[in-house]
Length: 582
Ligand code: PEP
Ligand code: MG
Image 1 (cartoon, rainbow, N blue to C red):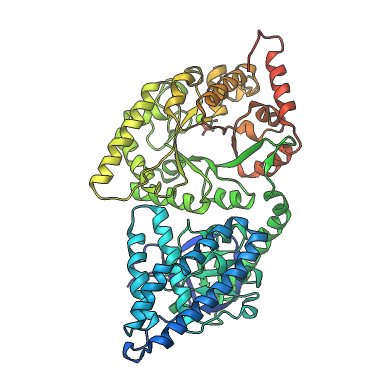
Image 2: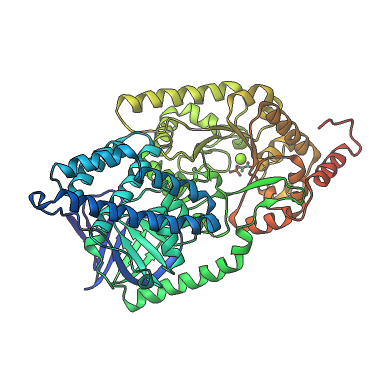
């Protein structure tokens, strides 16, 4: 264990990547792992954890062992049956998962294997260890995230069986108002704990893409997972704070920490309570046209806000803010951690990471004066001129893309060649990572930003090269109208409602529809109340906006009719203009 000291705060690490621990004063202890489900929970710990020790094998009597096993299976089956009923009413998506667990438990070959080993004189615990651990190990070492998660889930089932074998059943009456600390929890545990009034949970194992995590998020139950030392570090009855926003768990918080977290919880809870009715509703027009409302992420602070307002993903991560804030280029590691963290927080919703859009008005860390910066070395042009920067970012992105919800977006495209060049670099980087044995995501949806008139007008050629499109209406307005978006004297001419801009957008959406690819609009116009009807009429699938605009935007969408909005868009564009077919 290494430790260092800073301003009376002692940091210690046990060499585990996800976990960090800070000791403050005599008793307050901060540990940090994976933020699985947002929210703040404050309460006493209730421990649910099996002892892994196995009774001596020579004392095992086969029929007794077999009976113990059958009783544990029955107990688990009863628990899951109850959870299944709750799931059917509250979280139908979990029902098939519980069914698959039930099938696994009663699977004939598994039963036969266990019986044979028990008959040969082994304890059930030892047999379960022999059966489950190699499979769990193989799955967890797999390069596929979904296999890794299945490994985590199998581990959860395994631990649950061990608990039941040791007669450890959770007394649900004890968990009301408490925070459950467990080695592992299955989705059905989470349902039952939620029903029993548990405030939140901390687990030693668990993955961000696991069904347990997804369920905790949908039940709005604060959770921190992957805290490997949780069981040893936290004792029954310990006062805890669980910060599901940052992954921090405070053990024995002092009065000041408690008050600070209570204030944080109360203010977010107050807003959440007001918003909750609304965040659960879909962004759907009166005639059933559904939109995905996402957030443009400009800083890590936006993450919490985006979760609170019920954003359905991140439509744009402005990654250039990293070099601009740091005053230097971020390393591959820094980028990887940032991208991965965001992807984890939003899983399974999409997270769209845009390549650095440096240049134009966003040029500061490496200032190269340009006569005409908006028309100069900006976005993908800059990156293709500085391939080492592009490759580092692509490496970080591909590594983060082990999270299946990561998408890549290329800014400032104006030619097909730029797209070919990025795709080529992506391939080169992929091969390098494979050669170095570094884990990366096989699947990385490729998006093109449409923010130059050129890109809009060659859409027939660009669309086949993309998995999705994102219309950057801020720049599309600037370049279509030849008006500098930052020029205070031209503010009146900078008009995102100009029909020329909308005609380009309509064309892009039409071509994209023919090619079967989704389109997002991510410029500031999405936050403009008067634009909502036109955006709805445009017929895009996604809108990405600032966090504060999500709720009012959804509210407006829900009052509109798509048919009517489309009619209005068409008549607006056709007014005084030659025939426009859309
Ligand atoms: C846009 O141009 O509309 C956009 C979303 O990108 P940015 O504002 O970051 O240039
Ligand atoms: Mg732009």
